Image (cartoon, protein in one colour):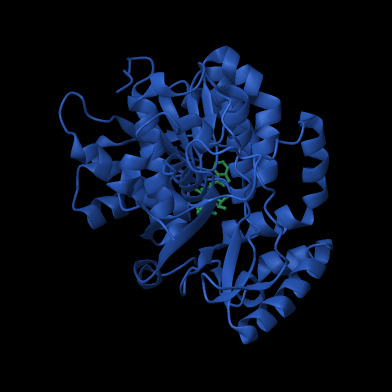
Amino acid sequence: MAAVTAGRPYHIIVFGASGFTGQFVVEEVARCAAECPGSSSLKWAVAGRSRRRLEEVLKQAAGRLSMPELRTDIEIIVADVSIEESLAIMCQQGVVILNCVGPYRFYGEPVVKACVENGAHYIDICGEPQFLEQMQLEYHSKALARGVYVIGSCGFDSIPADLGILYTQSSSHPLQGSSGHDATWQSAVYGFADSRSLCQLRKKFGHKPLPVVGAKVKKRGFLFFSKELQQYVIPFMGSDPSVVRRTQRFLYEEEQQSPVQYSAYVGVGGLFSVFKLFCGGLLFWFMVKFSLGRRLLTMFPSFFSFGMFSKAGPTMKQIEDTCFSLTFYGEGYSEGRDPSQGRPDARICTQVLGAEPGYVATVSAMVQAAVTLLNELHSLPRRGGVYSPGSAFYKTSLIDRLHSHGIMFSVRNY
Ligand SMILES: NC(=O)c1ccc[n+]([C@@H]2O[C@H](COP(=O)([O-])OP(=O)(O)OC[C@H]3O[C@@H](n4cnc5c(N)ncnc54)[C@H](OP(=O)(O)O)[C@@H]3O)[C@@H](O)[C@H]2O)c1
C-alpha cells in the first residue's frame, strides 16, 4: 500500500462524510480498515464542514459496526468547499480524497483543484457527465504534471457499465422498488436543464469520431420491445454512455485497441409503465427548462419523481430489498476473421450483478477503487491525469476486488 508519512498521515480521507452517501462510505472504509489491522493498516479520517455532524456520523458507525474505537481513534478534519485554505489543509493530509460532496456541478471543482495543487489523488461518485468531462478538459494536464490521479464516476455511475464493457471485451476470447436521495435528484434536474452546455463543452475537446470497426451497429428507436429482456426499453440517460465513450477513446488512443460501439438501454416494463414514464418524462423535460420549474422539482423530489427520490433518501429496508443487474449483449468477430468482411459471427453475454446500487454498490465500488489505487499505483496509466474508471483501472485487479465485495461479473454465450 502507498506509504503515509508524518506530513500526510492518512491513506484515505472521506470528504462529505456527514452526507447520506458519506455515512455509508465511512462504514465501508471502517470495515475495510478492520480487514487488515496492525502496522500495515489503512489510516483514514473523515472531513466535512461541521465537526458536530461528523462526530455524530462516527458515533452512529461505531454503534452499527460495534466498533466503539471509531469515536475516539478517527480524526475529524473540518473543511468547507467555499474556504480554499481549508481544502488545501485537508488535501495535504491524505493520499486519496474520497469526495462525497455533491451535486458536483456546484461543489466539485474546488475539491479537484485543491487535490491537484496539493498532491492528493481524487476519487468521486459523480454521475454528471458535464462535470466529469469539464474536469478532464481543465485538469488533465495539470494533474499529469503533478503526478495526481483524478478519477470520477467510481460509484454505480459508472463502474459497473464501464468495467462491464471491458470485461465483455476481454471475455471474447431495473432496479426494483429502490429510491434515491435528494442530492442525486438535484444532479439530474440541473444536468438536464443544462444539457446544451455539455454539447458545447464536447466541441472544445476537438476529438475526431472513433473509428467503426466491423459492421455498424444499427441504432434502435427511442422505445422498442426487447426480446432479450421481454419488456419495453428506452435509451439510458445517465452518465454511463459518456464514461464508457471516454474509456474507449483512451484505450484506442493509448493502447490502439479497437473501440466498441456501445448503446445503453433501461427496461421500463409493460405498456402502462411506458405511458406513465412518457407523461412523467414530458413534465420533467418541460419543468427543467424554467427556473420556477427547477425550484419546484428540487423542493418536492418525491412528488415529481413518483417516489423514486426523496429528501430523506431510501429507508434501510428499501436498501436491503434492492439489487441491480446490468446485462451486456456483445457481438464481434472470432479469432482470425476480418471485421471488414461481413457480419459479426460471435456473440457473448455478460452480466454485472450487485446489491442496492445507489448506496451499497456505490460505496463498495468507490472504496475498492481507492484501495486499488493505493495498492496498485504502478499499474495506473502514465503518472497522473484525469481518467474514467475503466481507463484508470484497466490493468489492475479492480474487477476481482469488486467480485469479492459483492459486485459480480459473469459471462456466457447466447
Ligand atoms: N454514482 C452514484 O451512483 C451515486 C450514488 C449516490 C450518490 N451519488 C452522488 O453523491 C453526491 C452526494 O449525495 P448525497 O445524497 O450523499 O448528498 P447529501 O446527503 O446532500 O450530502 C452532501 C454532503 O456534502 C456536504 N456539503 C455540502 N456543502 C458543503 C460545503 N460547502 N463544504 C463541505 N461540505 C459540504 C454536506 O455536509 P453537511 O452534512 O454539513 O450538510 C454533506 O456531507 C451527489 O452528487 C449524488 O448524486 C452518486
